[in-house]
Length: 79
Image (cartoon, rainbow, N blue to C red; front, side, top):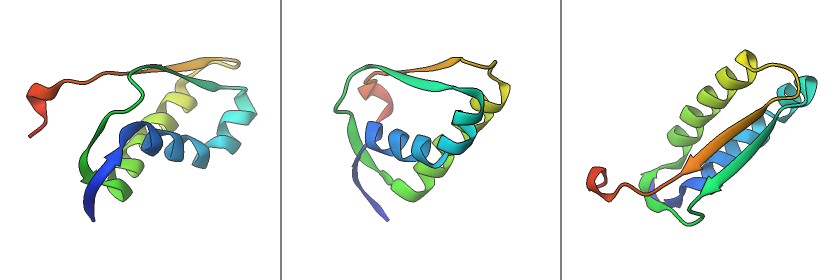
């Protein structure tokens, strides 16, 4: 279902689903950049995409790592 969504909320939802894996390695996520980036997308599929990215990052990260996510707006690519 395509609708207006906030990307930070979607990323947070994906990260919550990975909490057990992250806790095993004491990995945290740090957000940086804009807070209110909103555009039209399918939240289910975008959450799954971020979950895959964050899962891969968590599996590849060292113990006690921080995964940094920088959110920025690039309106030239959003139509």
